[in-house]
Amino acid sequence: MPALVLALLALLVLAPLAQAADPLVVGHRGASGYRPEHTLGSYELAARMGADYIEPDLVSTKDGVLVTRHENDITGTTNVADHPEFASRKTTKVIDGTSITGWFTEDFTLAELKTLRAKERIPNIRQRNTIYNGRFHVPTFRQVLALRAKLSRELGRDIGVYPETKHPSYFRSVGLPLETPLLAELKRARLNRAGAKVFVQSFETRNLQALNRRLQVPIVQLLDAKTLTIPDGSGQTYGQLATPDGLKAVAKYADGVGPSKDYIVPRDAQGGSLAPTSFVRDAHAAGLVVHPYTFRAENSFLPLELRFGADPAAYGNIFKELKQFFALGVDGVFTDNPDIGVAARG
Image 1 (cartoon, helix red, strand yellow):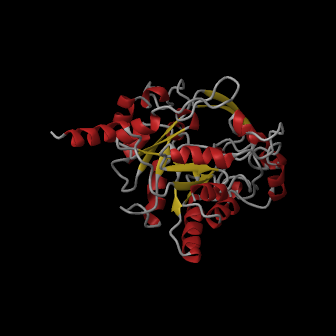
Image 2: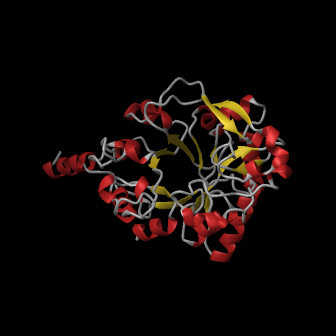
Image 3: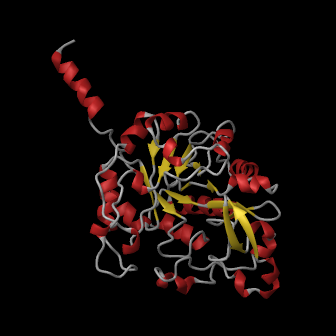
């Protein structure tokens, strides 16, 4: 074999795999840096800011309707505590091995949830968002899909949707599986088809393996902290999934991975960035796209060297962080600030 050919082959093996031509910008819980998360106002703003996809997290009501909340405990993201008629429903449950006291979506019918209003999750960091407290209700997944269709027509581009099943094993254990209504809503919106702008994601593995046989859209395996055990009875840790062999196993049922940022750029004990890992290269070698989470503008979420001043709520250099990850070859990003994500992508 000619020496030039050998040299070119070596470069292909050793060089970083190229990023997607246009990495995706996913509005994490909508544009949650500017509006209370998982509200129609947050999703709409994300789309108008240029997000390619909006991300609704899905949990179930008592009557089996999918609504969008980051977890089934609605204590911190709604005004349920201000409703005396629901005071008796405050309870303690064990969710994925953790004891939680609060109010839970599966104890409310959809009609009851619709009497509540959303509020800002982290008011000490996002005080400006609190002016929107009480303005938005808890939307259903169907309402989010309808908004997606409306905005796609208005904006002249197809807005994608990136739903996540939250605590699927838990919901299955209480007789409210998430997968069946998810498939039904996607079918109703004509989105369970090849080429539809949809990704389906989960922190669990077994539900994604089952969905792989029923979905015609890409699947993304989310990765939590490396030492945590996946809460689906598989016995695996997320760190095991993130090895080269683990990623090859993921590729048998998924099309991508959604790691926390530290899988790609770890941090030291002081919060400063360390050298990038081989994660992006390893995932690409397994045939998986890489969509890390979560890019947030405030100092409290940024590595030490990208913070501006000491105020945890002040904006730091998220632009530089995004640029770094794009340069490392990621195929998309989850961000609370989709306008900055679009600008950094260029």
